[in-house]
Image (cartoon, rainbow, N blue to C red; front, top):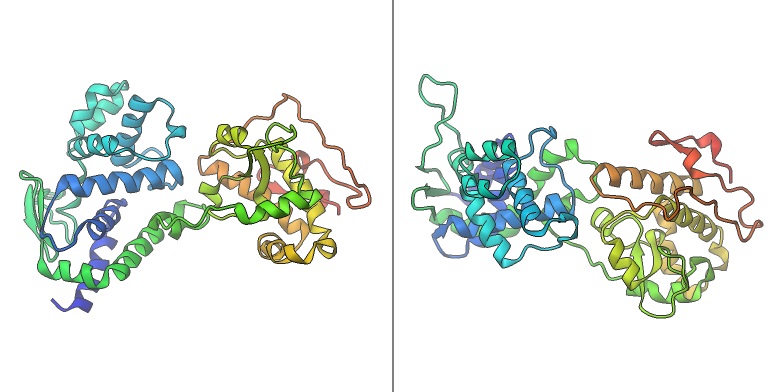
Length: 389
C-alpha cells in the first residue's frame, strides 16, 4: 500500500467511533509494534490500561459526555483499584502486577466480577465481552449482520492493517502497517492524539488536553524558583502555605492548583510548603483559605514590578506577569481555574477552621482595599463591580 494512502486510511479508521477505544488501541499499537508481526492481546491491553489510568485517574479526562455511560475500561480500572488499594486518589502509577491483573480483566470482564461489591456493576460486566471484542471488528469498518440492526462482532477477521483472532488472542500485523509505524511513528501518534482531542474537547474544559492525552508530561522541576522565594519577601518563602508555620528545613514548592491539572510550573501558582505538608496535600486543590491567600499575595507581587531585582525579572515576567493582562484578569483566571479544576474531579482541601478567617493586609499602601473573594466569586462567576483595586 502507498504510505500516504495508508495514513489517510489510518485517520479514517480511528475517526469512526462512539467512544475512545480505537484511539487507545491505535496508540497502544504504535507504542508496541516494532518489527514483530505477531502481537498478543496481553501486550496491547497493558498499554491500554496504563493510558486510561493516566487519562482518567491522574488527569481527570472525561472519555464520555454522558456520566451514566462511563467506558467499561474505566469501570474495570476503578473496581480493581478500589479492591486492591482502597483509596484511589493516592495511586500515582500502576505496578507491573496491576497491569498483568488488569490485562486479564479487560480482555474478559467476567473474571473481575468475583471481587466487585455492587451487584449492578457485576451484572453489567458479566454481559460485557471485553475491550477487543468490540474494538477489533470495528477498527476499519463495522459490518452489520445481514437483515439485522446490530453489528457482527466476529471472533476473527481482517482489515488493511491487521488480522485478528480472539480465540488465540493474537494480532497479525500486516507488513505495510509495520513499515508505516517504523517510518511515520511520530505522525501516526499526532494523528491519533489529534483525533482523540477532537473527540474529547467537547466535554472537557481542562487545559493542555493535547499534552495530557499524548502523555507528553512537561518538566515539573520547581528548583529555578527557589532563589526568588528565598529572597523576595512578598512571596513569604519562610512560611508554609498549608500549615502556616515557619519553615526551617525540607522546603518545597507546592502547586496550589494541582500540577496534574495546570500542567505547568508558574510563579503565580506556587507557594512554599513543608515537604510533609506538601506530600499530605497530594493532588488536591489548596483550601479556599489558601487560594485567597495566594490571590492576595499575587496582587501585592503584581504591584512590585519596578522593585523586582534584575536577576529575577525573567522569572517574574515569564512565569507571572505575562500570564495575565491586569490584576482583575489575574484574579478572575485563578478563581476560574479553581472552579474548573473542581469540575474536572479534583478534590479541594478543607479550611483549617469551620469559619474562614480574613487575612490582615500588612501593607495598606500597596493594597488599600482587598475584597472578600468568597462574596465576589459567586455562582461560578466574578462580579466585576465588587472588585476594587
